[in-house]
Image (cartoon, rainbow, N blue to C red):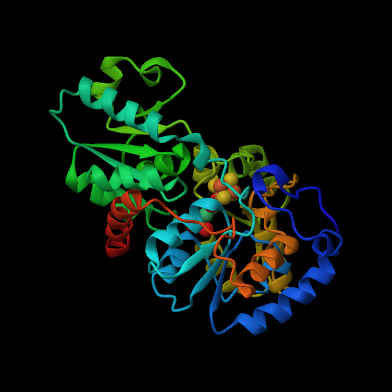
Length: 374
Ligand code: 13P
Ligand code: SF4
């Protein structure tokens, strides 16, 4: 089946050969299977849980962001293809060996949340906050792993750390042992939900909006706040609403609501359970037969869970399509093109992700700090 999310070919930087252009997904999948077998001695394929079934079926390793990062540091294959989004491929390039090559099959597979925080905006916020505080109190910067490599380097340089949705509680607790205040970006929801669970009241958290002067905060607010949350979010997870939980409570009271911590405060706090994609999978696969779940996360994963566990009822919390359209950009055609580049030894493949060496060193410092604490 053709889809409407084929990437913008201009930015993609290369066009598949004519033969590829005209191939159906079905034909591409057959070719991928053959090529993957042929290349298996030198190829590792990583797949995030939000990938389509057709792509995930080729993954040697699947996982949430934490597990895939841990895996990336231990792969012994020359070529690593990341079926996920750009920041994930960058993280793998930071963690793997210099002689290994990391590929992202579609360069347009970004993360809209990661795009909400740019390094110059974060540097400027950092300066403003520290100027107001006159460096009398130590602020620890923590970035969610869903960000560009230069933001990872920023936290490495400023005694901070990276977190994922699996370890946010541990990392934020660590941050409060290192300093008095927390600067958390780019996902305000993961930051707020985790800090609240750690006992920090909402009135001690402020949102820093990079599009407003001084983040939209007064000096007094900056001095009084314990936590600065970046005004970023995931559009997929922000689509889940408290009304959807109310609907299930009223019509299917036996259904357990489980959500990802990127959901808004109301949704997170009214759900029965919450956690990373790996946590959601684990909880559902260990549930007794007959259990029923409404899940607040991306559709590809929810549908796969429903298909994998027919003895359970698993459905999306939302009646609307909660699809991560950037994850969805990894289509069979682009995966096939990437494998063909590997087969012909194309060292100039535009899909190779290479993080600048200076950035890499500092980003690695921050990632390793996270891995040690996890
Ligand atoms: P996980 O680390 O829970 O897989 O989350 C990644 C992500 O991007 C969720 O939107
Ligand atoms: Fe980014 Fe949201 Fe997609 Fe996750 S689901 S990759 S946070 S846009």
